Image (cartoon, rainbow, N blue to C red; front, side):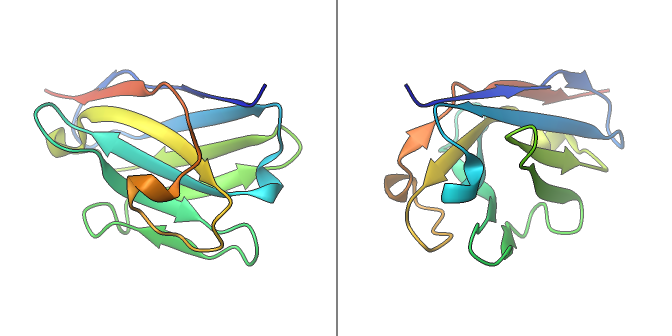
Length: 124
């Protein structure tokens, strides 16, 4: 059974760094495009980043460009989201997802499997 499991979320202070992990079971990430999404309280879920498996292309939302980095470790079958210079507006539940689509479309309907999410809170 294919499952995605996020981990690493916790309470952080503004300016700090945090790395989220997304581990897969029942599949390997090198068959899929991988994305990170987040949902802040009272807001819709939004796409944060995507890694295209075919050529390593990466996408970042404007709000995280230059601060977040997506990466993949094929040995550990894990995808990471390195988050630097955290801001209070980064507070959200972060989800990883995978899609067979060849594109990094950040619309939810394009993604086939989702993890349960991990909470990141940035507050002083």
